[in-house]
Image (tube, rainbow over the protein chains, first blue to last red):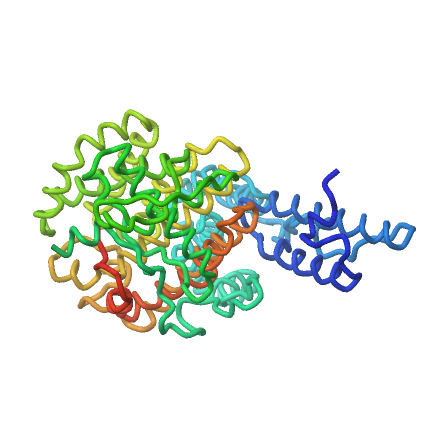
Length: 213
Length: 297
């Protein structure tokens, strides 16, 4: 088994407080919230398990008896709750949307979801269609299209809290993980620009010379 | 590519800077050894960054070597390794196809592209032999991009996806499965970010020359500048891709390169994006001592 101290990146002489601090910092980094809707979520979950196991092992070793790590979400499946309503309407279109919703929520194939959505004619594309299309785009990382589709979904069905939440979440700059000392989290605000743009220290550049001549 | 990926200088220790500089010079040298002198002209920061992402866990020795630009004192360089070779091959292929694209674009000046294209033809042929798969996918994605441009595509995500997939294609050359997945995601969003930042950077020029630019159609622009709300909308997309890059970065141990990559994904990209949106990028970069102008391919 890997050395638990190595996993937490601390020496085995670390105090209990240092162990806890290192564990918390790593747990914050690999928390499922940071990997929500991320195709690499399974790798983050593995990391989280490793960290939890290492912390647990150190606690056991130090206290002489079993003590579980506080759960920072590593054990949880970042699974979706399916909170859509069961459709009363069983028209072909509603069934397709139901299938797509299921596929998208459970991390299924985006290509298939998109194919199914394309089967619905323009006239049958309501708020749900736009919302699901937005979800497909969001999963792909196409944030601009996702946002436009969420906006359409909200406009078509203004009372729907799920659509509104999706749009609000996307519009907010979420407090994502950042290492200590790094304050910037947006292209549009925060931080000081002067003098940071970088890495020109003494680097020659044949290309640069070429274009200057 | 474009030279937009830059670490945030104050975040790096002297050793980090020297090491990054040695990787940059190492890539230049590898380009020369593997593909001939003209290939060294395509060097830029983006490709050096690509090399450190691909770096093997063994750092390798740094040696003092002279070069055509520093014939007397020389520079510290990393000697050729598989990451530098891969980055060099991919750089040549990418640049070659982008040059061909620029030569076919009626709206742009062609002199420098013609010259460089002539000079690097041999380099491209060699690189294609080493990486036939990457050459093929690059052509496919650039053809798709070209079709989207021809049709005047009104979304920015779709053309950005073509370029993003193209860059993500480099990950296919990585043997280790977990690293390949992580790099695929990282490079996809890096490609997306580069494409969008470049579109913002070129906006005025493209508007004036009538060339395709995804932002003109997406925001129905009537002149070559982005209004504030459009900047915010674009920044939302840029930020999202940066966050996905940093999430991917944290899942792999990049060893000695960790501080450099960290300073890029947690600060450098935000700073570059902002200065491009502000229109200050080129002044900020040129005003730094010892820096040549941004070479653009």
